[in-house]
Length: 166
Image (cartoon, rainbow, N blue to C red; front, side, top):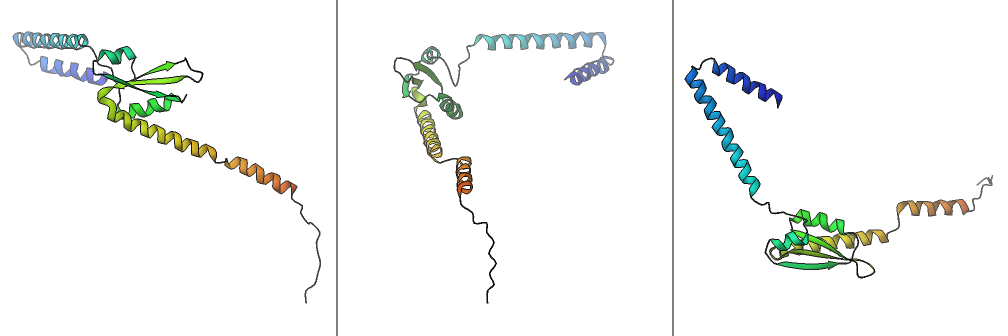
């Protein structure tokens, strides 16, 4: 970055030696007009409201006037769903309902995102099912410790037999 600034300055100085006074003045006024235009454009972009995407508050989601639907999730690991929803580009809001003993999560989403949310939700449920199947299997370390105990308690015949076969 610093090198670019130095090169630009150097280019202006080299080009500036070839200029007359009037050309130098015209170049500077053009440059200042360009800077002013850029500044106005930046200010205009700042004035337009930015539409949020992804996770939002319920108020922001409703404020977009595109219709809101919701789904209820009782699973406490909501972070996994949020990761998948970001992957599918769904605009959503999560609200925790503490009225029941295991807290429920209400996921609000735009009406136009219904198909994307359905795909995200099927992937989420598939992931949860695979995780449940995986947890049912005993771990390799548990199996190994079990076999170690069996080997410890196994009776080993350590007497040497000297028999001659004929």
